[in-house]
Image (cartoon, rainbow, N blue to C red; front, top):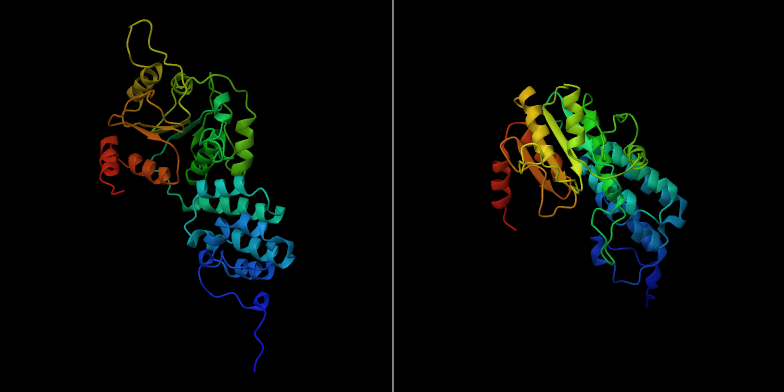
Length: 313
């Protein structure tokens, strides 16, 4: 009569990981799971692997890091920049080799973003004090480690990678003409933006700077938490914000220009209403890149609103 094999030595069934987590798995089992996981499953379960001792095995660390940093696997998985930014910020209990691999994957993921069909692109990242807050806001048990300024840097760096001639103009209560270097990593650019002098938020300031320089602009993208002064024109008593007034001046010089306002923490106000040439986007996800690309190609804001409303939830 054959002796029953000890449970700790039983092979791991080749089934999705979600079907295994309730079993009494050993560290060896978890190492086996990690070694055969797909790229996406690996990215999503790094802290789980760390919790179960997978990264105490040097071979597993090397294998997982190699998989995460593989450019072809990143492209095949259709990984996107924000998805990986969140993974990097959440990877707090993994070895440095794993974190470095995630940062490499983040750089590769920018190539999965479409370039914009516009010649003169400006990205205006807000670096005011409020942008150092988490993008999810402060929620007990669910506050993200990703800051609004990290997302602004992600947007700026990604647009630079896909549109090398783009201009980046940070701002707070004034425009800060310090363009980012497209060759630096996204995380390096995030730290550079985070270290700039912060103050209040004046969304009209960078548009006024562009107008003063009489610079060309076909597509302008704000990345802000939109906590801007509502600076109406005191000379005309107009209800329009100064941001909208400066945009009108820019449009006179660039008749086909388009404006995208990404409000990272959307509320009930905006600096410029949706018009044929103005698109407001609330929150942030990797879908934003495709949406902006479509808008830059000629779709007006009402088409995008109709597309959103037609989506079945």
